[in-house]
Length: 134
Image (tube, rainbow, N blue to C red; front, side, top):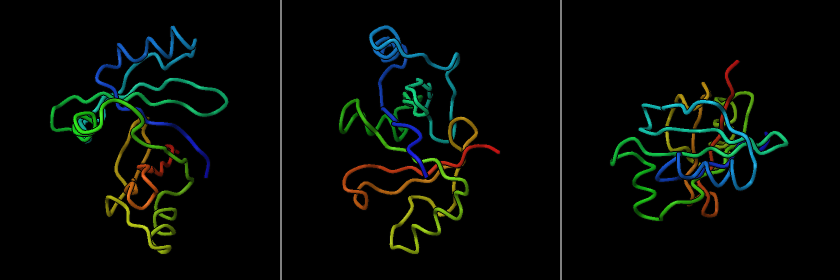
């Protein structure tokens, strides 16, 4: 398991990317991706070595990201850890007493399978497990 990315909730990817690309000089993927099931657009900003920042923009007022921004404002939404086997990693967490948000992993950005663990169990940080596509 390794830190894969930091998810940031933003009102506008177009505005937020200026800070990371122009201000910090980081590169990003050429295209945004829409994750329809979560009603969000995502843009991967590359922050070497091996970690990226995921800018998350809501596509609907009832999306989880829109609700997060409404309640807390823009900012850090989650930490994501890459795992080789999402089912095994989720089972291991359940066996240790932690409850995932979903019974089964769901498709996430970049073709990954993902599951989340509530901030109440992770000391205030929404935590994602993410299995990259094979």
